[in-house]
Image (cartoon, rainbow, N blue to C red; front, side, top):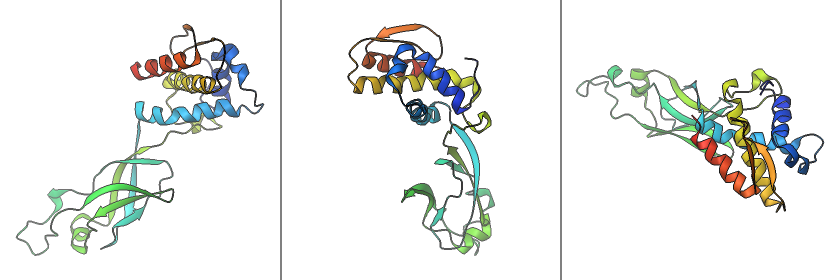
Length: 208
């Protein structure tokens, strides 16, 4: 589709791809279509993950640290636990075993959790700066540059959003078939909303 990755252009093309089925969603602000696009993002994150680098400053004997990165979705791996930098077990500065590290969510905020907490010896050997790779949450912005989905995956995003639209139609007990084309091939599809939802999800999962 010819539009950009801005929210407005995505809404226009999603609405057009649903043909007459789009007429069921009458909110003049396009809130329904914006919601379908937003609901597609978690699966886009799974299908097309974005990896970014984050940092924390560690303090001896502190086990939990708030994640500053607003787009943090999951911890991928860290580059702090480097055994090559550790003293040998027979040296007095050996800090012992390395802590286990995971992400934790509490009260709507993300944290990096160490178990056990790093000690002063860990920090002396590995440094106070904890660098880690994380999976970033996708976003759709008012400007195309603020949308994190690759423009090459535009059709895939629209396909997944179409599935959400069909789910909404099915929940409304739509009484007659609807017609739309999927975001990848443009092929007409005619069936019930529930069947279309299932079909579109399958096409999304099978897409490469």
